[in-house]
Length: 314
Image 1 (cartoon, rainbow, N blue to C red):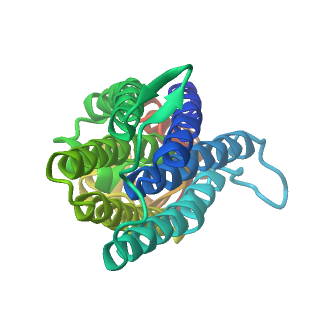
Image 2: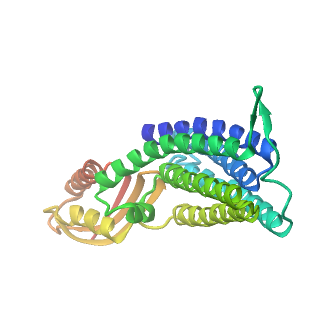
Image 3: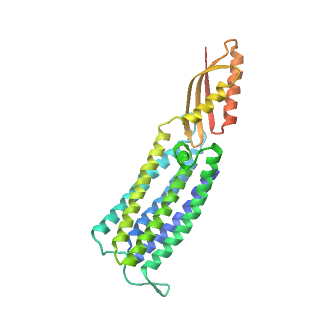
């Protein structure tokens, strides 16, 4: 949890500063790419606020009405990020880029701008802002990447693809993907503005704005799909289920594991229920002792296991 929080806080400060700079760049130059990037950074900043709310809310203790705690709050707020922020920002960016393509000649170029007593061409203002954005985003991306890599090593995933499919830490996943998309967007905007300056054709700047919007909407869909599986209670991957099953099955007093169910009730927080057949010679008290032993084994072997319920079968 601490690792996820530090990742989000780092991204929040970086994106807040970047959003202001990009908006000032748009006001000074009228570049379509800079407006798309402003939408992008505003959505990123709102994203971090929602994620921090989710982290704080999910940390509440379990109650009678929420016996497994509030861990799924992070899934919900991350879903809101994908729908409300990236979807809206992506649509607005794409729409602005499309309009700039259909009606060229309304921004992106222009005369020199007076800044601190110096005359600067719009392209240099935008380039300086985007390079600064790349530096800030790189810092946030490195933080998110370090946390995700730690999880990959801890849970022995093959790489980023498997981590994306199996992780329940949507906060770190969202921050990592968002920072990667933000870096890509800043680089695209820099290329589009550079091509417009080099060729004198504002269509490059407008096309870049459209591409940034499409990229944002694509990320919104991917993030929503990732949170959907966690919100509706998808079971753990087969590999994880087999590993946990084996821990129970290897107990000397267990004859058979009849049913196994495991689902995430929060980031890195598993609920496991089992129907287990014990040795027929055991008494009730002995079975109770062995159930407690199995529960402790599961929790000690995998720190994601928080709740275990075992139903003994005759």
